[in-house]
Amino acid sequence: MKIETSGIILSVRPLGDSGAVVRALSRDRGVVCGFSYGATGRKTKSRPMPGMFGRISWRARLDTEMGSLSFETESNPAAASNGRTATMVCSALELSDAFLADGEINPAAYDILEKFLNNLSLVTNHLSLYIEWEISFLSCLGFAMDLSKCAMCGTTENLSFISPKTGRAACDKCGGQFSDKLFPFPPSLESMMFFLRRASAEMDIKSLPASRMILN
Ligand SMILES: [Zn+2]
Image (cartoon, rainbow, N blue to C red; front, side):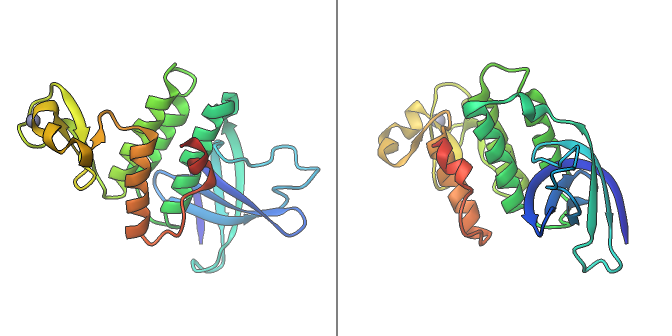
């Protein structure tokens, strides 16, 4: 078994003296996971780090084995982030790592992560870029939200609320009387946490990553 592709590193978990279990998200093969010899070694010049883009080579005798993975870095757009933006990067990578299973092919999950990381240095409103990523990510997992119009009357104006039940928007007029049961529009980190928790419960994922908890 051999896989040659390109992707984004989601996680690097040190194992043994200088190795690590590396998980990387590719567009065509989903998450590729393997043991990377020397990944955390002192002498290693280019250590694989979460958020890096590059070439992945994976090899194993059987496709049920973990296999060995080597990674050749091409770019690292996340390297320029710092402070709160760096926490957003960690959160997007760690949520992808937690929710996407090995070998499960999900090109949309790759596309939105690539777009998020590449756009970090191009936008000034990092929070709205991040929240947009979370909405798209939930959609990739089958938990789509519809915030484009009021779910009740269809208007695209004066959207003021989001229903926790349906993940759909409501206008001022339709949602006003239920305002105590609805989240404010647009979505915030706090309201997105509710939808993430619900998705994690349905997918049997025990806890959300610490980086996501820190963002709230
Ligand atoms: Zn309405």
